[in-house]
Length: 224
Image (cartoon, rainbow, N blue to C red; front, side):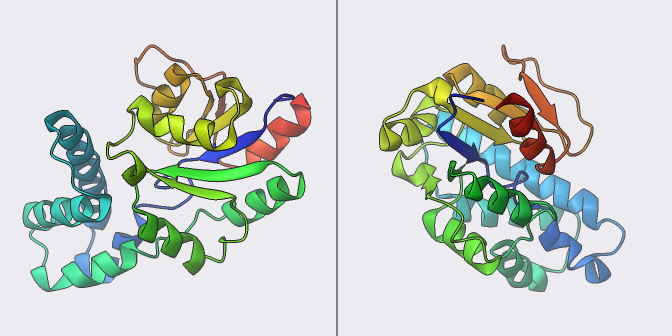
């Protein structure tokens, strides 16, 4: 941590709660809202990987809509709710510790950035709607390289922009495949294990595992 020049965050699931759109509609969706939200998220990720492999790129917003269509059919949800769910996805809620953690890191003069599958407009709206836009140096979108994580071209972006070494980056994600992607690339990847999950076997084990981002500030204090 002593040589770290940039702290880079995944957005969806790490800073922002991907289930919050469905949760805000749980009175309409009913008890199945959480299973529906998880299905939507899983389908969304599968579409990013499959489109990367097929070289049939669609941006993240189109994929979000396509995966929602399938999920609503699978859970027999009223099609009239589609617009509401999509609008809520644009303004997902951050996890409660996120604003304070980012402000603390910013005060310590770390370069902060998001590295995400999201489109530039989606990321801008997310941080703006949650009053976080003044805390980030950059919002890196995969649209700049036209392929989804965990392709190495994605992780290249902040290295090229900041002209720093891979081992000078701390990368945080709640997604184990993303932690492995960044770690295998050469980042110091930290797993934000919010749900007490099991890590994937993808040739990388994170040096650090935290339950939420508030533990990051403690980790930095211990190692610097």
